[in-house]
Figure 1 (cartoon, rainbow, N blue to C red):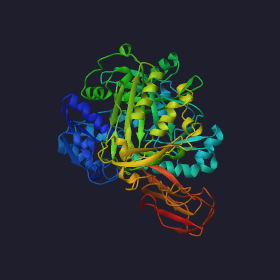
Figure 2: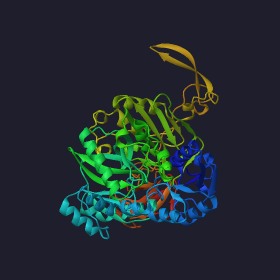
Figure 3: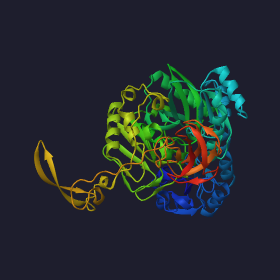
Figure 4: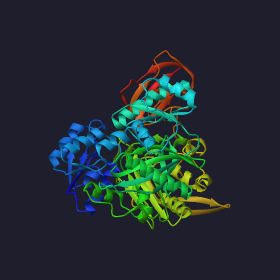
Length: 586
């Protein structure tokens, strides 16, 4: 067994790996940026080393610093988690050449499958086919236009060296090709350190189905059932479940195809082969050469600890079971709780300090998180607060349990996606398994659904409350009653306090200006990555003024009225805070 593992990641996945290592008696080493000095994964690890810097590029994907820390720590293995360097063959190769085990596939398999283009070719060689797409990198938007005209619109532009929906843009027509290509490149570069992209036909209403595979160094490879990840927004998953509710013969065929793909590239360790399923047919999508965020639901229905298996396979042990031993028991659902304001379906990043974090418990409930109350959700990293996972004897039970658990969960200090998660789980389309990857954005009505952090009273702590004696009238009869409220909720003399009027958001999402005022403010802190106008330009209502990146997501800041750009207060690369005015339109 391995003796000391360095986790080259942060947040909840770093915490997950640290806990698995501790259960096996393995010493753990954390790494951290300046912003993560007091983070939960640092507090839990046996040892911790500073990387310096704030952004991922300055810290978690700084190869030189990571390799230096690996040497200094004396670690005999590195777990990359997901994101960052988890699918970077150069990093895996550098570690392997140091004589340190990389807890994942070998560099050659990452070269094949980490590059989505060669992955398509590898799958086709073993008889597994995907939707129409290219096997060449995009170098010019004209290629996108030509492809769309030949195979039909919409077209998906995807990061060749990434996954998880990062760096993916969907183009509906030729006019949007250039802008979508630029945006996909920027996101891919920010998240994976490489900006190469390819494209494929975008199916209209598919289910996104994944097959978890596990392979050892002795030629054994199994698949551990399926997951459905169709409840998505911006191609980022919100709710995932296992198993997928598709016919058993399709699941078997899909599982066998996934094993073929894995064996075809001599894959070792845990990986996920992804498919699109529509109208009884499935199409190969890609292979993620790492552990998935949603691995928890597979663990809950199979009883297999995937991180433990990763560690044992990396140590050279054979799989302790065969395909015939794999059993699927019950149904599991994972809800990603992100620091985002649902904002009627716009899903605006909401960085800040977690003032309160009270997670649900009870039978069949699991929480995988990377934060505790008092920790900071930074604009520089992914905004996943944690994953609320439930198990039930069947899907209806799991859905009911997930709703109950979400209702018990309290997050203060940042807005979260919980209201959207509840809307998904309560919807009859979801209950009937009639949703698709487009459903959240095209069919689910989130108008009027907003998020707000839990207030101080939500913690259940009455010590800070004060008594207020008030008179109330019920059915014409007057009563004197006492209520316990937050000190700021009512004036000291008793009676009722008129609520403070809330500032109305501008069309750009900024809270500082009334709708249609022409004063364009940003709704969150972040970095301006592109400015599309200049002073004196004429703009129409809805035109993009600039693009704001926060928590690895790009957000278009739009004009709230037609007119002339009179002031422009930002430039590319500039950091801004929530409510900052970026432009004035007259």
